[in-house]
Every structure is written in structure tokens, then in C-alpha cells.
Amino acid sequence: MGKSSKTSVGSSKSFVVYMKRYWQLYAMLFLPLLYLVVFKYAPMVYVQIAFKKYSLVKSIWELPLADNHGFEFFIKAFKNNDFKYALRNTLTLNLLDLFFGFPAPIIFALILNELCFKHYKKVVQTIAYMPHFLSWVIIYSLALQLLAPTDGLVNMVISKMGFDPIPFLNDGKHWIGSYIGFGIWQNFGWGSIVYLAAIAGINPELYEAASVDGAGRFRKMWHITLPGIKPTIVVLLIMSLGNILGGGFDRPFAFQNNLVMRVADVIATFVYRVGIKGLQFSLTTAVGLFQSVVGIFFLLMANFISRKLGERGIW
Amino acid sequence: MKIKSGADKAWDIVFVIFCLLISLMCIIPMINLLAKSLSGTDYLVRNEVYLLPKGLNFNAYATVLKDPKYIRAFIWTVFLTVVCTILSLTMTTLCAFPLIFENLRGRKAINIFITITMFFNAGTIPNYLLMQKLNLLSNPLVLILPGVMSVYNMIIMRSFFYGIPDSLRESAEIDGATFFEILTKIYIPLSKPVLATLALFYAVGRWNGYSDALMYMREAKYYTLQLLLYNIINNINQVEVATQEGFSTPGLSASLKAAIVMFSTIPILCIYPFLQKYFIHGVTMGAVKE
Image 1 (tube, chains in turn brown, orange):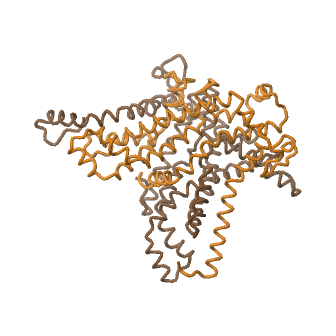
Image 2 (cartoon, helix red, strand yellow; image 1 turned 45 degrees about the vertical axis):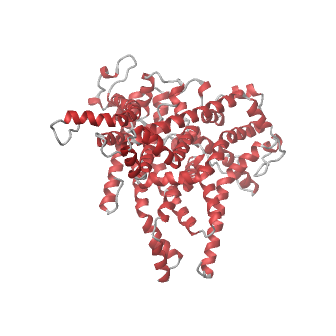
Image 3 (tube, helix red, strand yellow; image 1 turned 90 degrees about the horizontal axis):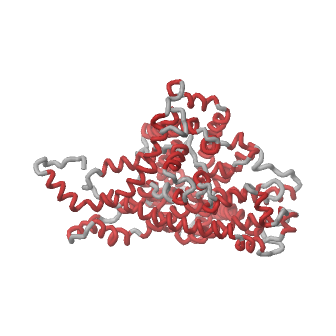
């Protein structure tokens, strides 16, 4: 292996002795590392087509550089209205998720922590974890069953009370609300696990001391529990901020329909539609690269700021 | 227990009710779905089904269970999930175990090599072009290999391994045990909680995932259950479905859709409550130690 041992004399002999014992560990690592090389590193080779004119017949090393010093497709992307919408929607939906979805598990954990019936708490937890185990396709079909204009449960109740049905999934603004709402629904229970664990790690003496000093329930929550879980909150906040231009494919794609594409198309679905379906490989690779680079930049920034503020950061 | 003031007791009640409402919010969609799947067509068309089935019948489930398309997709997805989970656990263990040995040469470099993949992802199109190059498009292996190991899960397992006392493996090393024996005879038997957790994570990921099948799979016979469900919900090939199964009334297809959703949800809903104590541990470990 690359590192030479401290004693250079006889190091080749000690290397043989070392390998005699340690070869099994390298053998174990072989397949996992091969997997990473093939499925994580090899695709990076194809990132270069963001700067090149893609053609099916040529090998990717022989492709000619795109115009404008290779940046043609980045320029094209930013002139593309669909991409502009996708970029705006990605940011909007992620910011709304952050604003409404991020505090939800924290609040839920704080409330669960105040429940004094142990069995009841357990049942509530089990039920609250359930949505996390449903796929986004299933969640969307639940949303349809609940929110469809004529035969959805909620609209049936609304019509029965004499109001007009609300187009929860077919009108831009309402769609955003439903999308964010089901995001919270899916994650608030699962997200609370981490905070509950952090709460469990707080020294109980702090609470006793506060009780002696006459602090009530909410003062203890504010002055002991919240500061106690602050490091966890910061770490998860950094990761969310780092992901502000990211986001998965499954959730938006499952929720999209033709009536709301203006507000529902995000970068991941844009890349699928224009790239894989529309075969514009160079353009969409450029978009993906832009997303990755900005994502790393956001992550570094968030980590830097959190360290400046005296928190521990994620590394 | 300390004596509580009146205001404190009032807040206790508020929290209990709040949690009750939250729980109802989680299960009402499922109950509504179950009711629709069991209801008669007439009631569904007239929008009369709320939380209890009306005109109770099992026709929708009978249709699903008689249709080879759903059964096939179900068996295929179960098979995929089992194979992926076993392979993923094996790969994850093989990657995590060697990395806990501090005198493994090159350990730092390997760790960096692994961590980079967490921060930089090549992107959808480069991945797609790679699958094309490897001739994996429409090959059933494409639903297994690309996601066979998650670095995040590997880190969870590694931190669990770190928690096993060094003295155990050191005494085994003195007794002349090979590393492979240490792994299989000491570490794996002690790691059942983390194995259960990661098995659940991998299994849920495979069961619920549909984007890989959507992007890489053209052969309808290899569609996973979730992709089939996606196509049904969005009425892709609607005409074909309607003529094949001979229903044109929206009522029956509504209960059928509901039955299919139930059908593809139930396996996971039956499993996860029993693994609760394990996955709580796993999630916590993943967050505490990066």
C-alpha cells in the first residue's frame, strides 16, 4: 500500500507479513469499492458532455467542444423558459418545505416528550411513523382519494356543508399547499425520532434543578430542552440548506399533473423529461452539473456560517 | 410523581388531544382508502363513501388477485426486495467492517474515496448514459445493482461496529482467529439490531422506489409494483386497462384503484411496527455520528 512503514529497512518484508494477516480485509473491501468505482465514479466521466456536443455515434472522448468555450449548454439552459420555471419551483418548494416542514418534527418531538402516558405515547409514535413507509406514488393516490374535486373525501365534506369544492390538486396555489402538506405529513413523525433521541440524552438533573427553582413546563422546554437539542437542529438545518437546490425525483414526479406543471416542474423532473424523454443529453447534464455544484456550495456555506456562529457543523 | 397544578393538568389534556388528532390525521387517509376498496359501485358513484364501506364486497380485491399482471408485479417486487436486501446487507457489512481497523493501511484514503460519493453525484443523465454503456437498460439487473450499497447506511453500520468493544476482537486475534472469522463469529452475531434496521431501510427503499424502473426499464414485465401503480393512478394505458378488464364505470375502477393501493401497501405496514425499536436506534446513530 502507498504508505511506507516507519522503518524503511526491511519494509518489504514487513509488508509481506502485514499482507499475510490483512489481505482478508482488502478482499472484503474489493466488491464495495468496485461498486463505488463503477456506479459512482464512472458516471462522472459522462459529466463532460455538459461541455460537449453529444452524438450517439462518437465515443465521448472524441466529442467536439460546445460553442462559447464549452459553455453553450449552460447559456442555453438559462435561456430556456422551462428550466427557469424548474429552477424557480425547486427553490420555492424547497424553501416552503424548510419553512413549514423543518419545524414540524421538532414541535412534535417536544409535545410527545410532554405526554405522561407511556403506552399512549408509544401508540402515537407508531402511527406517526407510518407515513414514512409509504411510497410517494401511494401518498399521491391517498391525496387523490382525499382531495379529488368530486369524489375526494375532503371535497365531499365541503360540498355537503354547502361550499364549492376546492381544486386542491389542479390549481397552482392549492397544489403547492397540498404538496407541502403531504410532505409534512410524510416526514413529521419520522423526523422526530432524532430529536426524541437528543431529548433523551439531556441530563435529567437539569430538569430537577429547574423544578426546584420553580420553572414551569414551558420554561423548562425553552431553557433546557431546546438548548439541549440545538446541536441536532443545527446539523439537520445545515443538511437541509445544503439541499435547497436539490431534492428528490419521486415526490414531485408522483404529484405532478398537466394542469400544474408551471409550479410543479422541478429540476429533477425537468432533467428526466427533457433529457431521458427528449434526448437533450448535453443540456440536461449541464443543468445537473449546475445543480450539483451549487448544492456543494450551499452546503459549504451553511457549514461555514454555523461554525462562525459557534456551532459544531457537520464535519 | 409530583403533584401537578390545575394548569399543568389542563396542558396534559391538551397534549393528549393534540396527539390524538395527529394520529387520526395519519390514519384517516388509509381508512378512507380501505372503505373505498370495499364499497359497492353504486355508493362510490354517488359519492357516499366516507370512512366506512357501504355495500360491503370484495370484488375489487378478487379482481386484483385474479389478474396475473398484479400478481406478477407483486411476486417480482417481493423477489427484488429480498434479493436487494440480502445483497445490500452483505456489501454494507463487507465495506464497514475493514474500516474499523485503525492499523489498516490506506484506511484514510479509502474513507475519503467513499465520502466523496456522498457529496458529489454525477447526475441523472450521466447515470443513464452509464447504464446504456453497460448494457443494463431494460436488464432486470438495473433494478438491483446501481443501488446495492448506500454509503449513508454503511456509515451507520460502521458506527455500530465501533461500539463493539475492541477487547473482543483483540482477544480473538490473539487466539489466532482470521478477520473473516472475527466478522462472522463475533461482529455479525452482535450486530442483529443494526442489521435489522438496515434491512428495513433497504427493503423499504426497494419496495417504494419507482424512479429507476421508470427511467431504466422498458420491459413491462419487469415493472415494479410501484411503477405499475403509478401508471394505473395516472391512467397511463387507460384504454387498454378498461378494455382488458371490461370496466368503463368510474365506480368500479375507483374501488379497484383503492384495492391495488392497499395491496401494494400492506406488506410494509405489517412489518414496520415490529422493527420499531431497531429503526429508532438506526436513525439516531446515523444522525449523531457523521
